[in-house]
Length: 483
Image 1 (cartoon, rainbow, N blue to C red):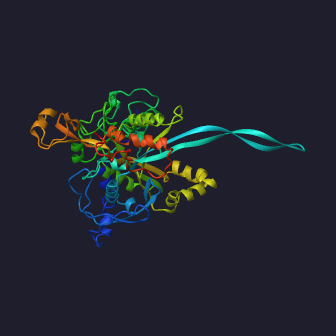
Image 2 (image 1 turned 180 degrees about the vertical axis):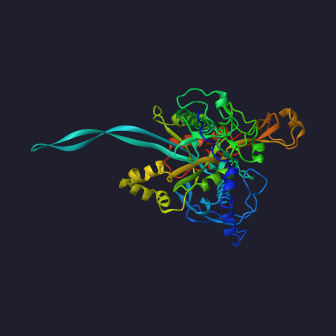
């Protein structure tokens, strides 16, 4: 039986084109000014400077020396950073550093609460029947908004002095790896007819890239949704799933810091052995830059973890209903992450047009996009291809290993000998020793905001801008109020 050819390794690609991946930008910028530092202006399009000694998130070391390059970026709305910089499409090292720099900017995280009810009303309308006119009573439905407000959760994201951990999707995870359809990096175990292959027919020890099956796509989608609902990062291993499904963490330092560090109360998962990705972000950047497709796209995603959003949503819903006159209705509670996608696209006229919603709308209006552009992007040999293989993870709460603790030591024993020990409820035992909670748990946040949420419902609050701080309850300034 013929098996698909293994995809070329990074070393093979580098050997065949030694001067194309990484050398162009170094020569081009060798005489430019170095050490320039600037801040992103997230409201306007501008040039962003990469420092020569950029720190790699998740590690204590810096990348190899590299010349300064100014990357062109554009902010679309509140969710998307887009760059059509030609250098980022030609030099894998420049793209790699650009993504690391963008990872330093945490996304925004909000929860929106909205309650509506329907009312039946009547009105008098004039109707004509032939030559006769008469007034009639007509009933109609009106949607009344009782409350609509948004709470800002962004300040709860834990600060990462070394930068957030960078993850790369697992080989068994169905995702976009340079094509217009989802793929996995795994040797096939079945024939096209669905029969199991013999062991001597399976290429063990080699990596193959093949199109994902519908079952693999459904499993990957269900896994992603589950991790989002319960607040787990993509690198945890869930019970019953095969190894290689979970993501890998790129740096040794980040793997050390996040071993036994995931906060997920009452959730079944394993974070004892964080995997090394079979292909790190730098190699994915080289693979993207080597592609000559006209509408290729590299998407870098930012995710938030550490809170059980499903449980928090239930508690918020109970609070809304308890203070709502129309408690028989179901309120709408939405957790949203913004500024969470960084996209790098080619520097050509068609790619730039498609990055603008207005121009893309015109192409759709005149049927140019559905009849010409989309088929070319989907099926053309030099058309489109997407890389959705990596991202950064930001914790709302996590466990930090205490370096002065001893494996096998109990929390009580550690608290007796350690100076300035925090409350015991912020400590736990792990196989490495004792860990301390860093950040705010969802229950602690909810206890602080519960009264504010209830007050907004009773006051029929409608506010478009996110609320950043809870409202102090009446009497809170009185001496002894909290006693």
